[in-house]
Image (cartoon, rainbow, N blue to C red; front, side, top):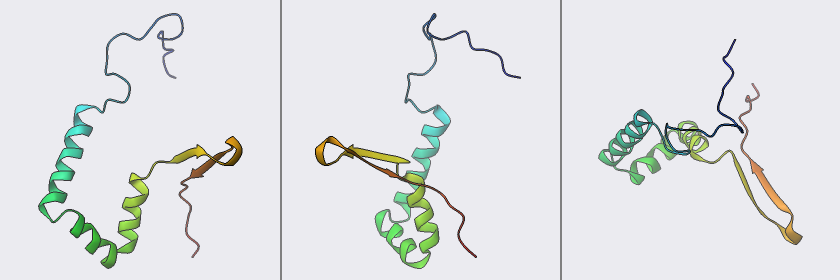
Length: 90
């Protein structure tokens, strides 16, 4: 059972991180990963991985692409592209 939040329309949020700000551990981990990537060759290394291990590279691409992309289409309609993870057929 979870406690009911008292923060809501009647009382504004006070304190904590601003929306969209990663926590310190997430920011530090991202910095370390990017540093390691730079140390092994950056984009050139990723190209080598893409050729030698396509499934691993595609999994990485799936992690960094946004879940949903929306944009205006013809006549003001919206185009929605969604990324879904599905189980591969045997």
